Every structure is written in C-alpha cells, then in structure tokens.
Image (cartoon, rainbow, N blue to C red; front, side, top):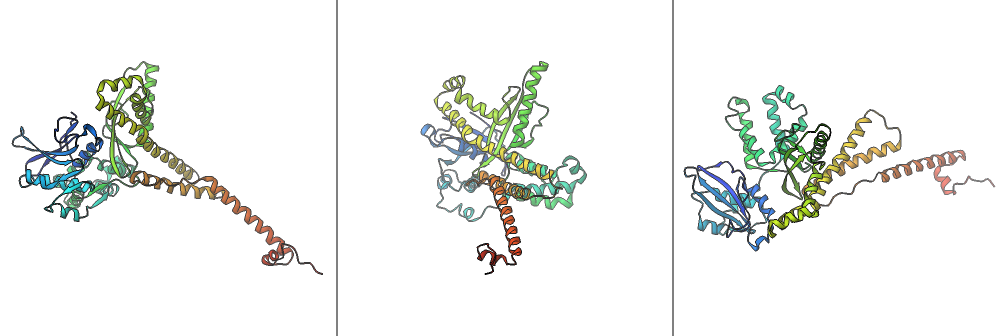
Length: 454
C-alpha cells in the first residue's frame, strides 16, 4: 500500500486526510492510497485507477483523527464510482461533530462538476449557486513578488536578478500543494507582525489564496520539480520548465558518463523528479528517477527508455509476468499512455520553445539593422505570425482544442515576390503610357498600344 504525508491540522482540533481506494466496499482489498493531504491530490490518484479495476467501485474517502486520541482514526466515504450521496453521508455520520466532511464534499463537487450528487436537503445548493473565484497563478505570483520586493528591495534585486524568471517559478510553486502551503505560512500574521505597513496587503493575498482556485496559466509549459538529487548542479526543490530541464538532464548524464570513462569515477547521481503539467484542462503529474551516468540521455529520452523497458524488452516482459496480472496490466497501460500521449505532448512544448528561442535570437541580432528588402520584411511578418502560432499552440495543448496551423515561410516569400513583380510591371506600363502621352487607363483601354494617327 502506498502512503503519502498527511496534511495540516484542520479546525476543531482534528487532523484531516483523504484516501483513495479501488474498492470502496472492501477498502483494503485492492490498491489503497492513504494520508493524502488534499482533495485535489486525491482526485489525481482517483483518476489514475481504471474504472473497471477488479470490477469494483473506486472512490475517495476522508480520515479524521482527534488529536487528543491519536490511536483512533475515523473513516468516512465521500465518493463511490462517480456518485456522491450526501443524503446517505448525512444519515450515517451527520455533519455536526465534523463539519469538515461537508466542506470536503463541497470542495469535491466544485472541482469535479461531473460528479452525480444526491442532495435532497439542498446542502450543496448554495455552493452550486456561488461561482468559485479563480485566479491565474501568474497573476497571484506577481502580487506575491511585488510584496517581496517592497519588503526588501536590495535583497530581492540581489537574489532575483531576473524578476520574470522568479515570478514564473513562483507561479509554478503555487500550482503545487506543498508550494501553496509554504506561501500561506509565509503570509501568516506572525511573519508580518514586524511589518505593520504590509500586514493588510499580506492578509488580503492570503485570503485570496485560501478562497480562490489557483488556475494554470494558459501558456505555462509543463515544469519539473527536483525533489532530490545527488548532483551538485541541481538544487532540491528547484523548478524548471520542461524545455530547460530536459537538455540539462542530458548534459549532466553525459558529464557523468565521461567521468566514468576518463577518470574512473564510480556510481551515478540519482535524481528524483516530478513533472507537473496541464493537458486538455486536466492537471496531472509524472514522477520518476533518472540516474545520471547510465547514459540514457536527456530527461525525455530517459522517460521513453523506462517505458520501452516494459513494453519492448524481454527483461521487462519477465518482470511484468512476475508482478501478477492486475499490477502488470496497470503498469503496461501507464507505459503506453506515457509513450503514446504524454511524451509527444512534452516534446511539442520543447519544439515550440526551440522555435521561439531561434526567432528571438534572430530578432535580437537584427534589432538595429534596417529593413533593406521586401524579403526581409516578409520574414519579419512570418516571425510575428510564428510567435502568435506558438502562443496559441500552448493554449490549445493546455486547455484543449484544435492546434493552429503553422505558418509556412514559402507563402510569405511568394506573396512578396509577386507583389514586387506586379509593382515592377506597373512601373513599366506607366512609363510606356507616359511616352505615348496617354494615361494608364487609356493605354490599357487601347490594348496597351499607342494611338495611331490616320
């Protein structure tokens, strides 16, 4: 049974955590993940369990432990299959002693509107009528960073020379449950008791974080969290866009392989990572570990090699056979999803970044150069359209929808060349008409022939 760390103490001197089971009738019969700190994280585990597993009803439950009696944990079921029966929960448990159950049900419904709810008493009606406030992670990161900077400008400028990069990393951290908790703790009253001039602003941001749903920015690439690394080039807890993390992992792997060959260095630098991403409007994570020195290449190459081990090698097939049918099928399905869907998704972002980087580098090199030819102007228009294409592609990948059509440089060259040719022809026609003392219109009406005197 896999377990994770429990969450913060809830109101009422009790500790609340969640569990996900593939069989809610016999919770410990199949896969069960306990100690989940939030509904958001519980839904991630819930989504990973195929609905037909064991032909049982998967679901989400809540554990409540009174801190005065740590040996006694109460278990309440929230979601079974895709149904939340609030009437049954109220009849069996009530909400007087533990209002956290009702709050958890409200949060679950707000995050997953497709859930079938039975609520004859209308306990969730008010929640349904209220529109949940949402805030873009980048906007919230901007508010936090502005507060950080005004608290100590010299410190901020010294440690964060690139404010845009720091703001982006702040947004990434806010999208992670543990990162959000860090900022909530930082914005607590005690932290700002010595800064009364900023106390009100800090509380406003804190209240916003607690009440609003932090949403994934429309164009934010998937990012990698370094959870642990033996390589001195990586800092535990650091966050990197996937397009930067992937080649960096490849470089560190190559350096360790070279150290093996040339200097006889033994061992590999183990690096545990987590990729956070939003695809078609759904936020998910991928967790793994790459050992720099194994020669698997960059991050995405390593992930592909891991999937291919189970899907395409004899040793991998033998390992699957030893696991048992159900577990082997789960691993196989997961590997196929990563290979066929997740990796192409991540590589698309890397390719978009490479194109964007090349365009910006070319624009920087030609920043002070004047436009000398129609072809240069056509290329400038092409680059502008490409940047729009990149932005819209990221939005489509993240939110869902059809990918836009990539601009073709040949279309721009052809248009400009034809336009230049037409202008050249018109100049010749104007010159000929003028030589015959005719207007262009009269010259064209006469079949582009001079008027002959009889």
